[in-house]
Amino acid sequence: MLSLSNAASLAGILLAAVLGALPPLLGRWSDRQLHLFIAFGAGVFLGAVFFHLIPETMAVQPDVLANFMILNGFMVVLFVERVLVRHRHHDCDDVAEHRHQVVGISAFIGLSIHSVLAGFALGASFAAPRIALVIFLAIVSHKSVAAFSLATMFRLSNIPLKRALVLLAVFALCTPVGALLSLPLISTLSEIHITIPTALAAGTFIYVATMDLLPEAFCDTRKRLGPFIALSIGILVMLLVTQLGG
Image (cartoon, rainbow, N blue to C red; front, side):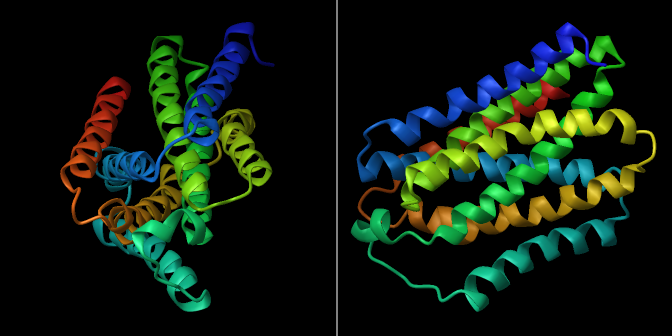
């Protein structure tokens, strides 16, 4: 049974996701501003991969297996977006209208997997009050930033608002659901089993950041410094989040 403090932690994570998602989704932003958000989101993804997901995977799995699973995550999204679905290229000015929705859905899947696993970590911390606060703060920080990035991608993908809100609600619930599921399961799963989806999520994030977000963020060749700064800020934010959780 959840204690009051643990239930408050889950509610706080939900609130962080909501507060992170609302500004890009409901605000009025120019294409240039949205592309700065996209560059920031790419930095968040790359920072999550290299500061958190890959180190976490490498610490448990053999290097060859870990690299294989990361590459599989990359290849699966590549196959879906570039082989199964016809990929159309558009001018930068038309990107808000024609943005390929596969990008946002791929990011949603990868972030949701990672959020469920973060919920497992949170659930395990409920039995260790000394580390529970640190893990909670790290998850809240990551959740709000990830929700902001995901909502920005939905906005540029031209996903209908109702559908975007449903997807964001599912994403927000992933961590609390993971925490609740972890209570009876955490003792029966090995670390290797838990890190396999982490490695797949890392590959997904690398694809989304490098093959979709960065080309879009830098599509206006006249304005490159702003996206580069936004990208760097996203990376630094994830470095700070990782240090907070470490």
